[in-house]
Image (cartoon, helix red, strand yellow):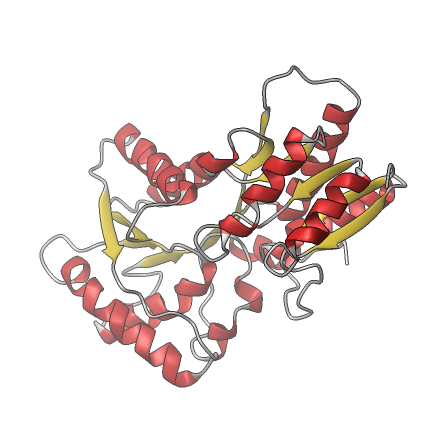
Length: 310
């Protein structure tokens, strides 16, 4: 156990359909591969299924450290299952590094994505194309750090260009169940309703910044329902860089004009590097935060971003 790093993650294996590194589980892949490249052992544990006595035994066995690549990804994972374990490890003197800008991680060393800079670069790129009325699409509530950071980056780019920020704030967005034409149609009609206020009138939006690549296709179809030409009347950009793998492409094979790659695999590597720096005494006592800058991906460049780390 002295040469074992515990990886706290609900998904230890990558979905084979997820070839692009924009999917969240590529964080775990980056962590595990980096641990093994450094000749340490990796032990993956699912915090939502492990029993309390098993966690207590693990703490007693004293692993060299713990990495948390994706437990805190918004509201989709029960963080209550992870926090007591992390606090227990910290009290026992076991180093912990975690991913994300969630305030609940402030007590730990962590690595996060530059969402602010990513949204800023994407917005500036659209403005550079002559799009003066880009609308940022987000879902209420803005209760996770990445939504807040993305809004901050978008607003900064708009202010610098002398433009007024525009928002399409979604409420009660239909959750993805089994991928199907019926679900795609339901989301399309839902988005078409919200787009009514932004596409009809004397000052219509000329660009949409989707929350993630998966929404690009339903947004495109919804724009078409309003008689708009995608990328001509309304440019659509994504985020995360996984659009080539999205099941929604089957129903509208549009391509986003641009997207942002968070470089998940590199963030996994950075998590391990930070942990080793802590173990080897190269860090100050205070918890450290490292930011991995997001990368703007435009046009056919996205096709070349398929991971070579498989």
